[in-house]
Length: 198
Image 1 (tube, rainbow, N blue to C red):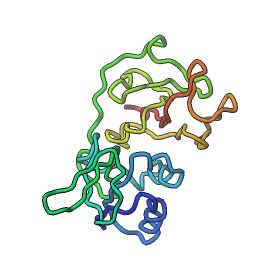
Image 2: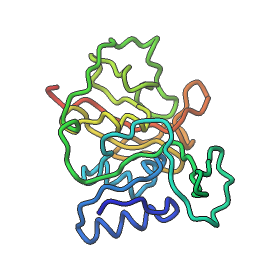
Image 3: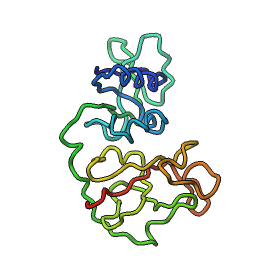
């Protein structure tokens, strides 16, 4: 199945594909990673991000009666309407070579650069490329880490975003949603750690 389902029905569509044991490659919002049902499939290695769409926005054709209220849109010389949508990704259960390539990291850990979360026993890593090469504990990385995720190199532990807290035995130290550093809320983070022996 290769398609672009309505983003508003993404959860239901993924559930149907998985229930029917279908192979698929579909487009969805990168924020769908934080949906509890979708994240559990990613964590369980039953769903991952596909190749080619890594950042930026993409253009989609829309019906003639579609209201052009998006920040970016155009109408071609034949009157066909298009909107630009930010933060989209391929979601798939089809394997591909790049998924098994190691993420090359080079930075070294220092407590001054990698602050700890107030409410989770993990360090914060703001950019995937800054994952320290010499740190084996829990790390909170951006959800876009999944663009480079190799399941043989890293283990996904859980997700700190909104109401999804304390997954996989990492309890929150204080009763707050989301990851906090020095009392300030950070964007949602995926908790990972390096695979043993890597």
